[in-house]
Length: 91
Image 1 (tube, rainbow, N blue to C red):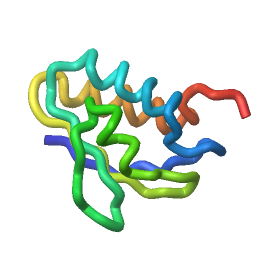
Image 2: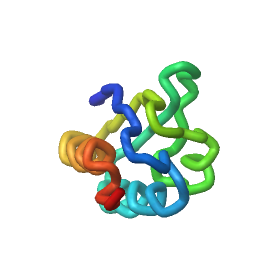
Image 3: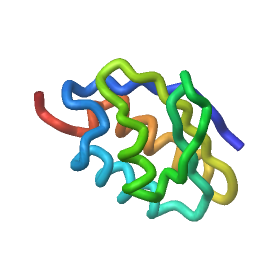
Image 4: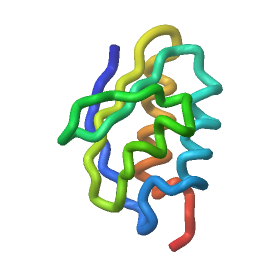
């Protein structure tokens, strides 16, 4: 299992379009993906758009990202890169 903290840095936070990008990448990997607010520690299924939206992650929110299973490193790297690069949105 790989676990790390990531910070939402894009201006609009984890809104619907950003969440859809996250889900698209997450579903391309066979490993389990869990994500949650660091201040709550309740992790949700990172492949569920409904669960992801319940995080209400605004700019500056610290999240815990966990990947476990086959392709865990690749999935973790790809999702971390997406978040760190502001979900590839122009601001």
